[in-house]
Image 1 (tube, rainbow, N blue to C red):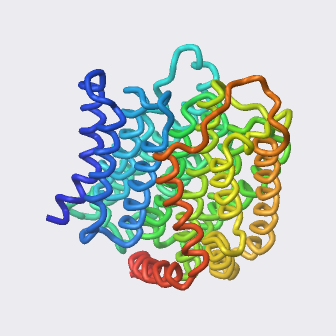
Image 2 (cartoon, helix red, strand yellow; image 1 turned 90 degrees about the vertical axis):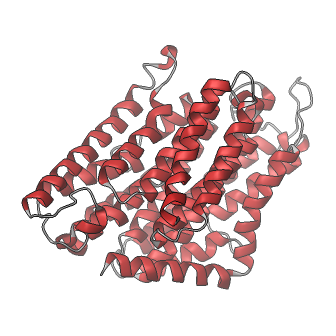
Length: 452
């Protein structure tokens, strides 16, 4: 029964995507999509057949998808948008839930399908994201083939089972590590592959781009494949991942300082802040795991709120936003302004929010293995805080002088889901002990799984 629920968690949204395509012109696509995402969330809750990391990731990601589907503007409730969002959900949950390497690669591909299918007029601008994600997918597939060949030559019966391969020191082929590393770097948007996410945010569906990245499958792959299947690497073998992640955090925070396009700016901020999750996951310490889990939660919730608010403003104003002048939208939409600023201060670790506890735990847990974290994390976070403050000022401060009709403030469906996100961020920030207990329990199980 637990295994069946786990399988249904990713099969239901896959079936929902097909159903939206078939009957989307007769039944509101949003209704079908929300129902499928809620069903996936319910199926993910038991988690009896999952390890600690997979259970945490599935519940969080299904919840994020519900938030995105409910809060999406009517302009984004088309058949294509709703079906694409469900495909991203189904593919990502399949990667989280499976113990089979072939299913993992299949889920990896399915989660990217909506982002590969773009209109012909955006074909040229979409070439770089497609190329980078495609290279990472081919690399992951090649790594799985090599792992299966190594396992078969060693007499392992089920060469596709991750659990059967864990702890068996047979995979010493450096090509396996290199291919998995390439898949991680491209999917996570780590330097030198950081350019695809800002391009995706600017040219494609903003909400789908944010949801896609907040799957954090690059960090998940480190914990799920690299550490348990390549035990001979040791801490030195994981160092390149950590170094490149820290470089990405610093570099993209500097790029954000000069960025004036809101879509690209939030994409750069998401890349910068989420890069620290990689450092925590591969730190090898329980504190590092706990900090990475909490930071995973903070980045996912906060950036989802930021993306939803930004997209809501675009839908209301009838076009993409420009911040050459102060727009003064806070006078017309004070609730959206409040959602934006609370999410912004949470993602950069302001005291009183969960981001503060997460960054503190992540810093302490990774300093032993990554001393540069002590310098880069505060630096990148400070730069990102400045960029977010500047974006908030440009969007919501100043006098509203544009000759356009009055825009509505946050709608009830937007208020409910965004308030739920902020309650988690602020509530657990005010009472961090509950968050610490949760993170320590999950990280203890994860640490035991990775080092057994």
